[in-house]
Length: 266
Length: 330
Image 1 (tube, rainbow over the protein chains, first blue to last red):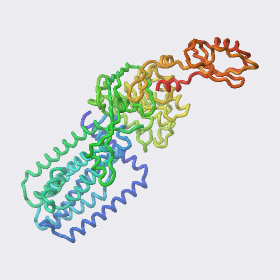
Image 2 (cartoon, chains in turn yellow, brown; image 1 turned 180 degrees about the vertical axis):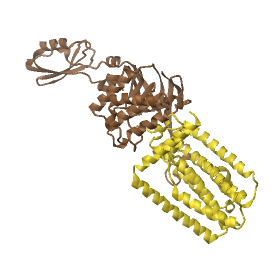
Image 3 (cartoon, chains in turn blue, yellow; image 1 turned 45 degrees about the vertical axis):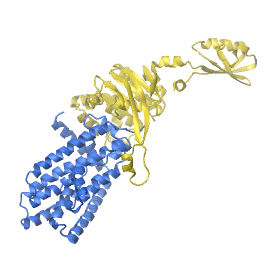
Image 4 (spheres, rainbow over the protein chains, first blue to last red; image 1 turned 90 degrees about the vertical axis):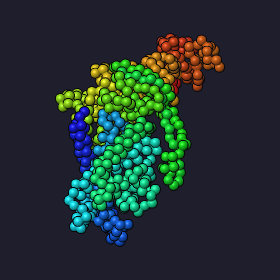
């Protein structure tokens, strides 16, 4: 099969998943509204943090808002397309992965479109925060227009990195079956930590967040260059390299994990 | 078509820890329980064979099927299907496989049956003309028309199984793996399914491997049967010779009118090796229960012999059930 036919199959499966969810319209609408409400409350929390502390260790309010926004948007991109990777546990516990393994396509490609999410609340929240912080910094002359395409670029590489972390974490499920707690650590806690400048943390912790669970590469490292002109232009291509490396490693790990799949009794 | 070389599968489950951070602690724990589900199975299935695969619950049937279809990786040993290894070339192999799990649907639960077929056709790159032609055939054989537009979740079990079978056949696979396709179905639905399976085996020459707990499936469909018990094959051969090799006796209950006399030599004794071909197992008032193997002695001979004992009133014969034959093998 060519890349094009894979893509059209993928699109078909996404359409199918939306169609399936639309069978339960009430639930779909309610879920979307609730998700948006949660996002609003999260946004209020961010606003309070920014208002209360303002600058943190030399990072201005706008810069911290930027860190938040990039992280939110990268996560949104990852979860829109690959939410089921995060929910692999469900497939392991009741053996639903069996069906996907009998399909003549890569398991991930079959898994990802199982449930396509439209995360409007997150997009709006992240988008608003990004607009607010970027326009603030443009107003003060800290950044120019070139920051916009650069930001879109790092949202993309960030999504790849978050996806890789999510996939590697989920893969542990082939050994342990239950993975929620590990996900709390590597996905939720790590991501929340990286919503603030890593300089806040002790050295060992920021090293973990840059190397072992590289959430720092999603927003912190690129911000150093884009917002503050530190490091150098090479940061951008290096990020793409790092993202691809993470992706390759986690895919390799995933492939290995699949051979350890245990299914369930019947 | 299918070659299996000494496959084994042992499941290694970590002993789950209790308390705080149990997940993390389990992850790094070195305590395991090992369960050997399949312990060295080898067989070969030729093109066009219809093989029944039976065994008690937990014997390793489903595990074997899952290894054959590339879902589980064997701990050791090798599987070759149509010249390819389903673990190294999973995608290429599953293109030529049709898999049906009776307990679980392959179809899209919330969507009309028709949609599932459209998606599968795209997924297996079945071209439109072939799809239409095959669907016409299946619709006729399995009567899909009646529920074509119904969401899968609203189908009855029988309808769902018919739809699942047709779906597994849509890409015209060479080999079909069926894991309990008749489970939970009523007599009528079972008959429909069997009829379809027989047809695709005989007319279209599909190689079929079927697991079941229903011995009628085996008797009516399979030319060959394999019995698995505790992870090992305990029998592999024809259904007939399986029955013969066990040679369960026919159970006969006779009621005599008036007095009767049972010759001494027929009474069941401690050593059952008496040359008697009829064994008396129970005497209750006027009725006597005996066992006889009808391969050694035909019905007429038995009745004649019994006639000598006294005046016959009624005779009731019970052939050994295939279920019982199987129990004996297990």
